[in-house]
Amino acid sequence: MAKLGKNAQNEQEGKETVEFFKDLDREALNTERFLEKYSKQLGIVFGVLVLGVLGFFAYKQFVVAPKNVEAVKGFLAAQKNQTSGKDKEALGGNSAANPGFVGTYNDYSGTKIGELAAYNAGLLKFKAGKFQEAYDLLDKFSSDNKTLMALKFGAMADAKSGLNKNDEALSLLDKASTASNDAYTTYYFTRKAGIVALGLKKNAEAKKYFSAIDEKYQDYDNGMSDSYIEMTKYF
Picture 1 (tube, rainbow, N blue to C red):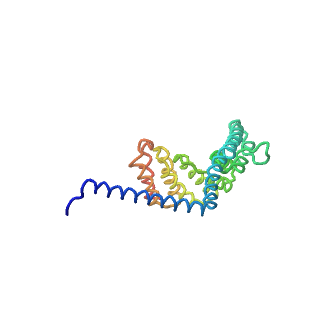
Picture 2 (cartoon, rainbow, N blue to C red):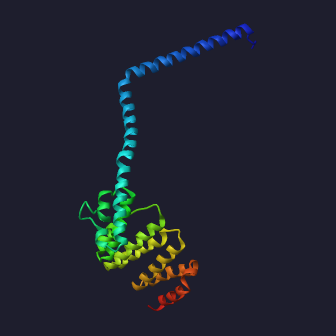
């Protein structure tokens, strides 16, 4: 096929350019018509998006932030009473003037400090021998901190033991023994799980826990795991 001459080639390129811009004009016209046709709906959608974004920041600024501040005030006042040995006042929950840990959780359960207040309230309820109330409050607490979660499961296990529900306590201690990356915390709850399993005459489970200690946590155990392993043979 013969090649186009330079003039013919320029003419062809010119036509292609004209067609290209005609296509752009048609697309622009179509877009303009689309916008005209759906301008009301698009305006509503855009308005909703803007309001959503503004609403989120307003919520964080004017609702969440003040709530966090008030929750911290309540928590620190309760903590001061707890440090002073005033457990009843620290627990609180009976008046707005003294919310204590219970009131702080009830009023600010959606905040992290509110959840921490529930944890502290649970410990005080356990100390007072109110094991079910302690368990329910401790169950409200959650954290990204794995060691704190291990302590939570351990405290909940103690509450279940106080209710003579040792099988449930053992299940919670098993969770506590695997929740944390901290070696001592893991050892502590593994040992505790082994002792509870031994008390329940679940010797195979007890041996599993004590063998894990013997393999991984001898530095903390001072050889006690060997004695417990022997006990699983006879009790």
